[in-house]
Amino acid sequence: MKQILFFLIFTWLLLPALAQDSIPSLSAKPRNPDSFWRRLSVGGNLGFQFGSVTGITVSPEVAIRTVDQLHVGIRLQYQYYNFKNYFLNLDNGELLSYESSVYGGGVYLRYYLYSLFPRNFLGNFFAHIEYEYLTYSRPYTLTYGGHIIDPYGNPYEPGKQQVEINSLFVGGGYHQPIGNRVFLDLMLLFNLNDSYNSPYSNPIFRIGVGVGL
Image 1: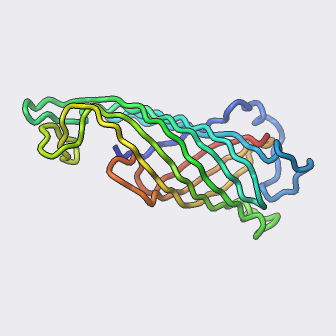
Image 2: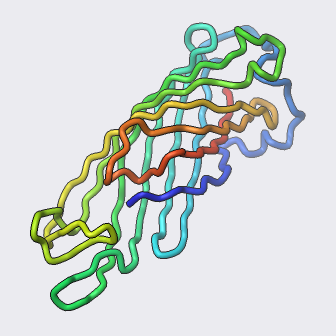
Image 3: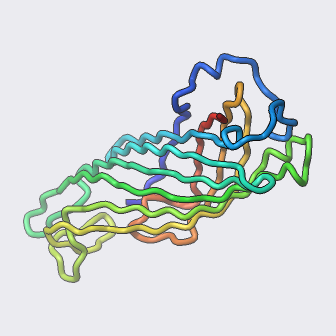
């Protein structure tokens, strides 16, 4: 189930803000007094994949700046997959397709380097660590001696199996303002808990759009 998702830019709710004047980088001095709402941002990303495996990902998120430039965020995740001719029935040679919905979410910490590089583009770089939990159901159960195999030769038998995936991502990225409080985050991440059931392949590229409130 390892796939590389191609993330497309998507701004949640406030698309008209893109038409406003551009703003300075993250390292610029804020024009308004700091407050709870001014420290919040919302955003997310969409992902699409087509071919023998069709996939759609929807992942909204919300984050708040806490101490210094440390941001704490929460992400929700929904993925839909359709696997065409993914399994092979060894008894009759029939190719089997299946579809599945993946649900989950994660929490993350993100630290921007503004404190080290004030009023410099280097301050827009950030470090990122994230825990993610996903779960989905598939129509075949992994079992020794099964007469249905996947592309990797793993044996299965008919019967639903609930799969749980725990991932730990580490990496970093760059924060690029593109409008009035609208920004683009480019990330390169590595999954330290990679497994057979993981939908990711290292390295993981992620593009997201957010809006500061």
